[in-house]
Length: 515
Image 1 (cartoon, rainbow, N blue to C red):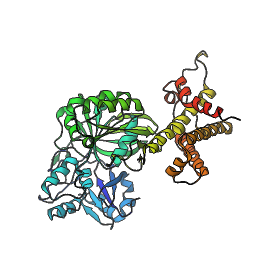
Image 2: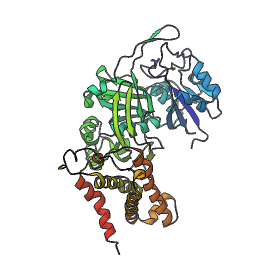
Image 3: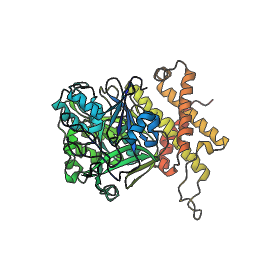
Image 4: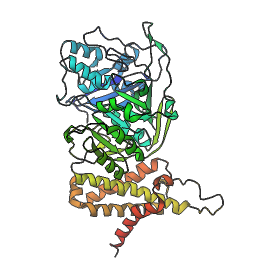
């Protein structure tokens, strides 16, 4: 996937980013290209645990995808010699670029290129290291134009730091390489992140402030986003936004306007709160032609509420409905960061509006861009039928096996752990397989074989059957069976409602074909 590409490794030791000449909190190892060579020295008492962000870039200069590696993985990524240099060099806190030739190019080398009017560093790289405002500043002062002239610097704003947001959407945004901020209301739970870090001494004995405070995000104990600056908007909006930030606000509609006007794209994963938070905040944007409106990617499960939000923001924002899919069971906020417990699968975001004509703020390993509205509708129905539907099948099978009425003393009030396919009896597994086959058949009848063969790149009905059954088996065996879940979450819309809307239609469809 990453043939003939640059690999950019952006290294920032947790909690030690210093300010530089372009503005506060924009990352280490950068100063004006016309100034003296940059020096970024790790301070005494720095945290031992270090992480690196490696971003793969295409030949067009766009970041394709970023991922986090730990210090123990550095040698396998860079090779023994370069890993040793990075770990032993006092200037190893700088960001560095690894080219396809295998050479390691430092930020100092890049600055020399700029001083010599050799503009070879892609805009995406500079924005990822220093933030979007720094990129604009550099562009205004230099010959900089390594990307499409009309693209401009990109800045994404996300609303919603719940389970789905922190377990799926934010990791996908960060991995795309775009500079971004996450909006969160100031609450006692979140304020525990805002602790004062001690200042430290650098190599020259100078006192360096550890502000701004930083945090990190993890899913299943695996680091997904590092070096996130935390900003309290009550102190004012920074003149220069960092590449990755979490902003706290008590009055989202007013305090956020400087950031709203700066953002090029938005996303939300707020559930029922979406209209109450997003609409008042974005309503201040001007009425402009559709081609000039920013995009809001609604990563929500309630598509009816998304439509209401679309109508409320018409003329100001293009609301793009997205289908989201990852089981996230808990989210905890603690000192140092946010931890989500989710299924091992990294999830999926399907953009339900084809041909947007612009880059999306999600990494390619998670996002799907349908070729047509018909394909988008099919992908939506496939999730409803073979993911949500089979989840419901498991929930009812669990109740059938384990439920005891509340009238039984001391029973009937507890949570029921969802059955897992790999722990079922063979009889129960056959029941599951029958439901998944029936639901796949119903889906094929609704969508049509010609479309399914085209979208899945196969040439026969048997291959379509194989594709859909394999998909359903993956859901049952590699997703649902790998995470602990409870019936009350799956049937949260109501037991009667879930039966009537998810299982009964398939039962009726099958009955018309009996005999």
